[in-house]
Length: 197
Ligand SMILES: Nc1nc2c(c(=O)[nH]1)N(C=O)[C@@H](CNc1ccc(C(=O)N[C@@H](CCC(=O)O)C(=O)O)cc1)CN2
Ligand SMILES: Nc1ncnc2c1ncn2[C@@H]1O[C@H](COP(=O)(O)OP(=O)(O)OP(=O)(O)O)[C@@H](O)[C@H]1O
Image (cartoon, rainbow, N blue to C red; front, side, top):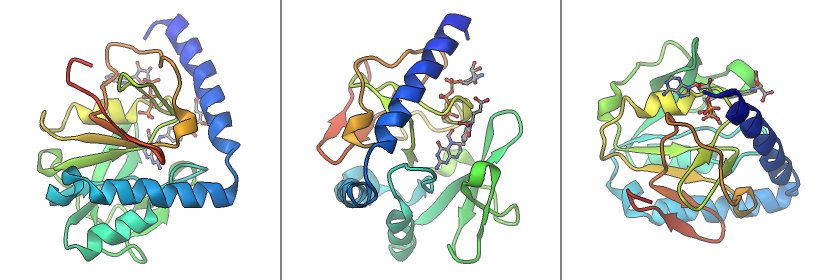
């Protein structure tokens, strides 16, 4: 990635994360409920048998209720575990009380004893992020984890991002390896991006 973009991404990331941190605890909780409800109402979610979710850390959109909903509806729940070199291990979880531990950076991650799934079995990926624009671009935390992981999925798999409306900016700086989202769900709207977008 070129140095100019790297620096630009770092600056924009900081500003997006500050916006997100400005939300109060109660506001974050109520908005997170609305966002998750929109996800559950979506056909993408209802159709998916194998769902890759993230578990929120820092002040991300809360997703624990979604993890519980996935398990309650007999869908398969896949969660990411960070491995070296920006690699995500997709591990299957069946019990939130037993299968998790605090991993890198304090993220709740599946223990290594959980079974790794073939990414080609995943029907839907729910994606976290620091910032988004309305062209479907995403800015992450700078590890490149998700962009590497997206390359291993079936082409048709929806990539549905969850964020607060205040994390949306005019234009996310993009590189060639950055994948576009299929949808972005906020407390205000479900944004759908066309493939050409
Ligand atoms: N809930 C959740 N899980 C997730 C992600 C996510 O964004 N949210 N990830 C999405 O990729 C992966 C973890 N990625 C991360 C990448 C960097 C940092 C981090 O703390 N970075 C340092 C700065 C490091 C540097 O710039 O050298 C920091 O922010 O202080 C944390 C998580 C996989 N799991
Ligand atoms: N698909 C990829 N293949 C190889 N390198 C990649 C890929 N995606 C990202 N990288 C590298 O990873 C680093 C971080 O990329 P970037 O800043 O786009 O991460 P991000 O999308 O913000 O992070 P994350 O996905 O972890 O939230 C960069 O050095 C980039 O070149």
